[in-house]
Structures are given as structure tokens and as C-alpha cells.
Image (cartoon, rainbow over all chains, first blue to last red; front, side):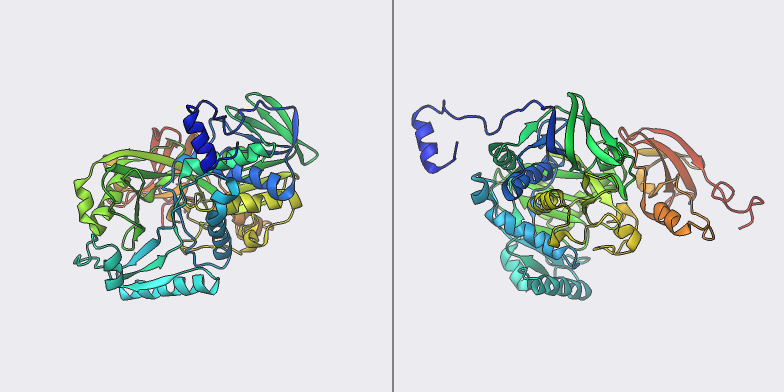
Amino acid sequence: MRYSALALAWNAVTGNRNWTPAWRDAAPRESYDVLVIGGGGHGLATAYYLAKEHGIANVAVLEKSWIGSGNAGRNTTIIRSNYLMQGNIPFYEWSMRLWESLEKDLNYNAMVSQRGVLNLYHSDIQRDAFARRGNAMRLNGVDAELLDRDQVRALVPYLDFDSARFPIHGGLMQRRGGTARHDAVVWGYARGADRRGVDIVQNCEVTGIRRENGRVTGVETTRGAVGAGKVALAVAGSSSRLAAMAGLRLPIESHVLQAFVSEGIKPLVHHVVTFGAGHFYISQSDKGGLVFGGDIDGYNSYAQRGNLPTVEDVCEGGMAMMPLIGRLRIVRSWGGLMDMSMDGSPIIDRTPVQGLYLNTGWCYGGFKATPASGWCFAHLIARDEPHPVAAAYRLDRFTTGALIDERGAGAQPNLH
Amino acid sequence: MRIACPHCGVRDVREFAYLGDATVTRPDPGAPDALARFIDYVYLRDNPAGAHHELWYHAAGCQAWLKVTRDTRTHDIAGVESLNERSLGGPEDGTP
């Protein structure tokens, strides 16, 4: 069923009895051309673009739980392309462009809202660093504006501009950045993939990766064995566990990142705002809750929940930036498993096992990358060569030394 | 999360700094395959879901390096031991 104003009106007058499921809950068949492991945003987008852009529709997405139950539902829904490094900017900008046409492409309301992403700076030195980042963005055709204190005050008057310790001097604004509705992104891609013939198989956990003579032949799952010509891993958070099934060790540690939402209030935060003197970022959902987060907890974890010192640290960042937030209650918090890579940048590449493809290392920036990750991963799987905008995301860059270290933190995953 | 420091007793996790996997060992730079082994040492990790041996530094306490065994699925700590020069591969007589 194609969604439109006419369909909405017709279903309304007929009692909403004729809506059909947006995708089939498929059972796994004996074999497929391509198996995508992981029914999150990245896996579903990969399957969608495989079918749409490359005509490969004999594809199944295997998800151990329900689709979107992992990190696709455990983020802060921010989209942006305000990167500094050459290997990153074109990729994230391609993602931004795909976000801009996503709803039309999918015929699905993903609630993409280009409300602007504002990074605050608090010193002259930080202003210089942000000017450099903004220039790098503009050289790559990305929008960036360096705003002074008065321009920032006009946009976000509720911040603490005259804080004695961290006065706000201005900000770097990407007006095309913003937010999208995380569940709708998952559902939209699932529906789009399903309509092109992709099987979406839920409650199907992969327990082994079958190989013969160095080539992948399929997977073992909790719903039986499934054969495949190619197997693609898009299981951020659990990448090391899945790769270990094929005998691979990755440059990845799994860490927990917490995020929070406050009680709903009237419209207040009209942009995505990030604090420059600590790690804190905030936006307001359409329901009215303030959605915010900060640093990862900093130790290896598969627990999907964090500890209180990080909660306190995030709240201190919020209080320093906008003291009025102290009047609000936090109503929910959650933790997601981050694939923290050794240089803070992702990996989209082939592996030493023939026919096994890897999509990992998203650190805590995976949501914004969803469309381009799927686009480039599908390109890699279909053509066996990297997509030009993801050409730097090689698995062997840790051997060749061509690292993409945005933060300059070195091989210490909890610092990226 | 709290860590039972062998020297200071049970302390809040915010007193400690995390370094990561305690099972990786620095290769011999003179070995013929030193380059490949250094790449493993610096970049590749087992990253287990389950028991994980890891290094914590008691920065706001006794400043000892500790080897902690922790379940990464539950954060339960099964054991903590203090590291000294000898266990870190230093000279056996304890001289720096």
C-alpha cells in the first residue's frame, strides 16, 4: 500500500480497517544470494539499497530480536555532517543528502527535521578550532556558519552565556543538521526492502558462520541453517562476537553509551545544541521531552546499561550549559552498545574470509550514518569494491597506518 | 560499580582510570614478525562478552595498577589483584 493523503482519507472514512502490515514477518528460506546479519537501521538500509540500486533482491535480513531493538532504538536521533577529516566528510555529507530525500524515496514519514546543529565554543582557541572545522566542511560543499555570541544568543537565549568558568563565545552552526525519528527510519527501510522482495526474519539469532575453503557458505541460526553466497555483518555492538565466529579479531571494543529523556515541556530547545566545554548534547523531541546524552562510560560492556558517575557527569554538563534544566525530571534513560574502533572511525570492508563483509566501528555516531552506511555497504557487497565516499574505511588501515582519528586520541577506544 | 582495591578497600569506580584489556602483552621488538605482532598488540582485541581481564589505575587512591576480572554482560567483578613490577614483566628483583 502506498501512503498518501488520499489513502489516509480513504482509510479514515472506512474505519481504518484496511491498513495492511508494512512488511512481512518472513520465515527463513533454505538459501539466499546475500544474508544481512542485523535488523537495525544499517542492516535494513543495506538490504533496501541492495534491492533498489543493485537489483539484488534474493536477500534476507536476520535479526536476533525484533527489528530496531538494538542501537537503532538506543540513540539520540541526531543527524549532521560536521566532520573535520577528509576520509569522513564526504561520507557523512552523502548521508546528509540521503536524509534530505529519504522520505520521498521511502514513501515513509521519517520525521526528518533540519532544525540545525549548533556546537558552542567557549574560548578563543576553541573558536579557531571550530573555524578550521567549518572551513573543512565548506571546502567539501557542506554548510557551516561560524556564529558570534550575539548571533548565538538570538537563537538560544536560555543558555548560561555569562558562566564564570565556561562563558559562551559563539558557535559553529550546521543548519541542515537536525534530527530524525529513529523507529520510523527502521520501519521505513524495512517496508521499502520488503516491497522489493527482501525477507525480514526476526527472532533469528546467528550462532555460527559456515565456511568452506576460506569462503563463507551460510550461517547457523536458532531457526536452522541458512545458506548464502555472501554474508554481511551489520551488528554494531556485537561485531567482535560475530566476527569471532569466522575466526576474526577486530580493532573494536564494545562500550556502553547512556542517553536520557526528561519529562515533556512546551517547545524550548529548537535546535540540537552541544556544549563545548564538556560532553553534552541536547534536542527536544516532538513529544516535548528533552533528549540528551554525553560521554560513554569508558569500560568494556555488553550490559546495555551504565553506571551513575556517567549520569552525574552528563547532568553536570547540562547544568553548566543551561541551568534551567535542573528544574526538570529525567523520566527515562537507556544504554546502547557502541562499537568503539581504535581510531574512532567506522569500517566498511571485505574481510579475509571470502564472501564475508563487515560494517562496524560506528562508535557513538552510527545513527546519522544509517543511509550512507547502507548505501556504501550495498555497493561493496554487490560490486566487491568500496564506494568512493567510503573508500577510507578499510579494515587494513590499522596495518597501513592510514587512520582517521578525528579526536587525535590514539588507539584507546574509550577516549574517542 | 565499585572496585575492591587490595590496598584501599571497596571504592567507587570514579576513583579509577580504565586502560583496557590486560591480556595483551608487548611483543619483542627484535622478533622477525615484530611488525605484525605490534599491530595485534596495539589494535586487535578479543572484546569478550563475559569474563574480561582488564587494567584499572587507582588514580584518586593508592595509584596502584590493578588487574580486574569483570563480566562485561553484568559488570560483576570476580577478582581484583594488584600488579607490581614483576607481574608487569619488569626485573624480578623489583628494581625499576
